[in-house]
Amino acid sequence: MSMIFTLAPEPEDEARETGRLLFAGPVDFVKGVTSMAALPPADRIEVCFAGRSNVGKSSLINALTGRKTLARASNTPGRTQEINYFALGEARYLVDLPGYGYAEAPVAIVARWQALLKQYLAGRPTLRRAFVLIDARHGVKAVDQEILTLLDRSAVTFQIVLTKVDKINRTERAAVIEQVKGALAKHPAAYPQIVVTSSEKGEGIETLRAIIATLE
Image (cartoon, rainbow, N blue to C red; front, side, top):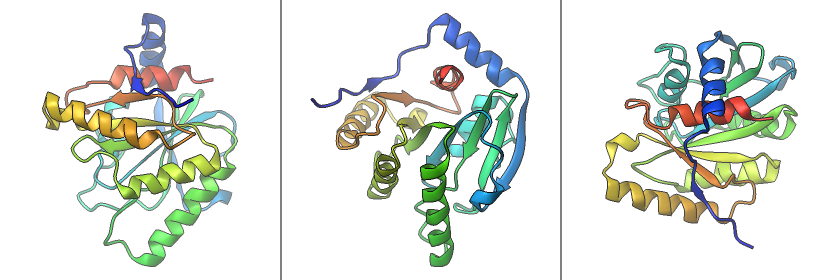
């Protein structure tokens, strides 16, 4: 039986408030790591954000946390080469993975990123969900399929988050959602709800906060 993919609904009031409280509380940068040995203790639920360079990952993290400079947006894609850990109080870790798909990064660095990413995804017992960010202007590309396949193999549930939806019109939005649904059909680890967001306009931010806050 094939999976039916839908858009994530607006959160119920209780979940919305749980999400608001989580992200309104302390949010602190913990550390950036380049090896599994340096990861913080696996003492709480964590979620990770993955996406192509320039997908708007830093902007989304800043919008979620309401802190404009928490995650550093860079004009040089691929500059962040570490797994960056942020603590949401004592309850959650939000993990920012290195951007992928940046052609100008040296081959050796790309290989090191990929190896660390594979180790992290396969070996982190408290990882509850990966959020894979897809630029709404471009949809799922071949380089995204690589990370989705890696998540399948690692048995990590992942959920697609469309970013920058304010940059396209309604017709384009409908088309990219259908393209994403089609791309996800072949991935058994895909969560069946797609989150549509705009960091600039605030669309989908409360929904994503509620999802992260209510994971068990």
